[in-house]
Amino acid sequence: MAKRTHRGGKPVGQDRILFNILSYIILTVLSAACLLPFLLVLSGSVSEQYAIQLHGYRLIPETFSLDAYKMLFRIPEELLQAYGVTIFVTLAGTLLGLWLTSMAAYVLASRDFRYRYQVSFFFYFTSIFGGGLVPWYIFNTKYLRFHNSIIALILPILINVTYLLILKSYMMGIPEALYESAKLDGAGDMRIYWNIALPLSKAGLATVGLFIALNYWNDWYNAMLFLDEGRRDMYPLQYFLNNILTKAQAMNAAAARSGIPASDVPSEPMKLAMTVVATGPIVLLYPFLQKYFVKGVTIGAVKG
Image (cartoon, helix red, strand yellow):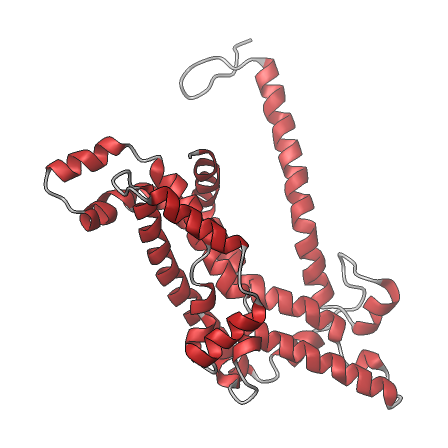
């Protein structure tokens, strides 16, 4: 009997075939286990409130209902507006943050910069020790005047020191000979940064960019701090959905005090429906960045 061969023509032994079969089985089981929580969320979002209260969450809804989504989309204009604010903030914050972070990482990774270790320590030190929430809030509102401004949703989380150090470690792994040859050809730092450092750091940039985008997409805290009730047109998606949930829970409490069954207000399915609505775009985006994400985490983590 002829042995099975790879594309290169080399024979494949039975142990290798058995290993591949076991690997596929284990990965399939692990993938299904990772998928189960999302299926549970999706099932709970289309369940009745009373069914969740009586029997808990199930993979297959006991009674199918779209009441949670109907309540979320009761005012579709405001929901779409919140989506628009979040998309704008995420795109603007990610591009600007990635640009500034990569420029700072390039400078700190450059061997020509004498004080790169001292400046790196400054970044690291300030990421551990801060002035506290109250001074930070007063500084942003009284002196920088971020109150009721779209800048308040972008600038406070624009730079993350952890991402800066990841990109710095990644760029330090680029061969110094490339920089030296570019300098011999008359290239300046900006040209080297744009034509050499950035193209060779695509995996690291994609990883850090995904982290930054997730921070902006999931952020609701800055909106709560800096936006008044009268500026609902500037509410990002997460804060908008959180307000809807808070009102639904308040309606449940008022209904209970009035003798109305609390199940008439689907607050439990709404929590899960909010998760589906908020995570949908990120779930669709992740597969396109997965190969860069994995490579960037592994390489950027081991290079020093």
